[in-house]
Length: 124
Ligand SMILES: [Zn+2]
Image 1: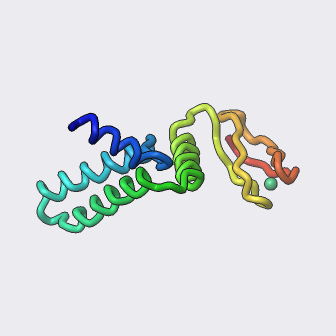
Image 2 (image 1 turned 180 degrees about the vertical axis):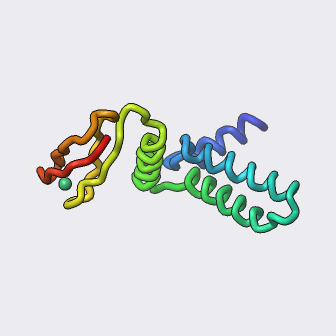
């Protein structure tokens, strides 16, 4: 019986995106907010927020649009790196918007955008 259920689940999930780090974060966030809303009565609105996160996670898990989900995961990784990278700083090019990574603590430096060649000065 369990074997049959497992087979069914495998067939059901075939071609779907499944889960990733971003989904784990969404699920944990959703659970945390729903716990918080049960303990702190004044924060009732958190229930809706937690359901939104949980449904978003489930939607991503069952999605068949794998390319779009991978783009989201890549965006999440860039976002995370922006806050966790202590060796480098990230600047947006003023003319084309390309994100440029430069080493920290080098004083005032001139940065050349690798995409459009525009030069701009920043303190790192
Ligand atoms: Zn540029």
